[in-house]
Image (cartoon, rainbow, N blue to C red; front, side, top):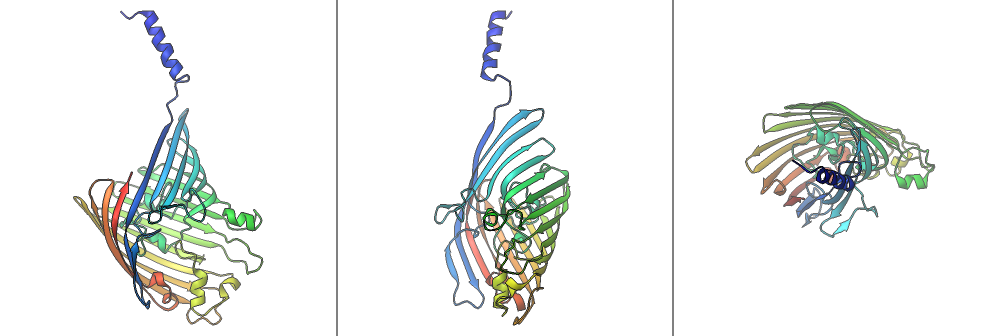
Length: 381
């Protein structure tokens, strides 16, 4: 028979170690390290460029991250997440002087919904924590590489500041998520806080055993600059579907954008217009680019191998001032392949390439007229 005094002493010791009997906070450090060789040859260029892979030149960006979580009781929890990209070829952290350039957020939630505030990627970038594209497996190549990712030609503002968002969990069944950003920090300093430069996204859909599908609506205003014409707000509709055959999978992304001011995550709309002969038209225009995108990808896993293929089509029509422009509309086709060999679940060898060809308005844009080849090693920790 247990001595009552011994039992009481053990209880007191346990209580002193955890006074309110709450679960201990969890903490993890994780990341991705990727490096390799990267070759591009823009059509019409003098020569191709071969070098060690840099930023945005690998299937996933290298990053280091910290994440913590603590139970609050009554089914609630709170936590934080910090992620910084690394240019592995130089060792530099972040970009443009931003330390945690990818994610810096605090969150609170239950098993049914989570709320967050801070900085994080928009939903149509295929990176954590609330990616609409990642949830629906919109890209069977599992890559951000040029010509191999839908986010390179659809609405994608990458990571954005001053953001609040909510999301239901990443699990089977119906989901809904939304975000609002009050603008980039730099534009808050340059213009009044109440001026434009806002972002809104709302996504919903279904995740099943074999079928995934959903719709995302995107809306973004441009920061007012009194020197130039006020620009129309961007509106975008993303339709995503994925079907898994029990290993092999096929994914389709359809996007329609109205008054886009950049294609993908690259803010080079002014350069596109200028190269078409419309120097000065970008700043004088209220209307932007109307875009239509179809992105089809297929992936096939076999033992330690995974091979994927992609084909995409982009049509872009400039609605702004067109004085001096040779073309106001153009198209671009892309095809590509990416192969992974899994040494383990965390370490992979990759190799692939893509070919892009644009015409008329997009004929002079290097990223829509190039050959890309790459190979390297990816490790997650």
